[in-house]
Amino acid sequence: MSRAAIPGLPSRYPIGAQLPALYADDDFAQRFTAGLDTVLAPVFATLDNLPAYLDPRVAPADFLAWLASWVAASDDPRWPVERRREAVVRAVYLHRWRGTRRGLVEALRLALGAHADVTGDGGAVWSDTAGSDLPPEPASEALVRVWPGGGTPVDADRVHEIVRAMGPVHTAFRVEVLSGPPAEEGN
Image (spheres, rainbow, N blue to C red):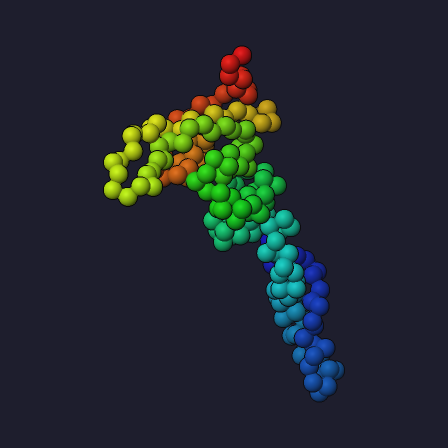
């Protein structure tokens, strides 16, 4: 339902009551301003509740995409509304961890409801000695293992999309989508 189409929404600020005394008893002026009140009532109601529109936890669902664009949050209309709200609320927090293992695991949990484990550093090495030889070539990729968190199967294409978006640019990733948690190594 559109906020502009709420039948019978009264105006908290009727224009007719604010007219000079000369027009207080004028039937035409009162009817004319009542028509304006009908048009302006949704505008006033929206402005009176503006803080609620800007809070993703209580904003109308059709505002979530707009709020998500403000903080560069992922917003997939196919997600349940509560997951979309959480994505907007946690967007700034996730940006802080972008490019890290923690950020990648959190993004996969938030977007897919999946668990993830990231191993390997994907090739980040350096030398702190000026003029020294280049360090040896590091391992060329990191491994991202993902498994369902709530019984819903994990979409491998979405995993790849999220890993590309949230992983460091210089790092190559290998993604494994598992049916359950990985077995403990060494057992």
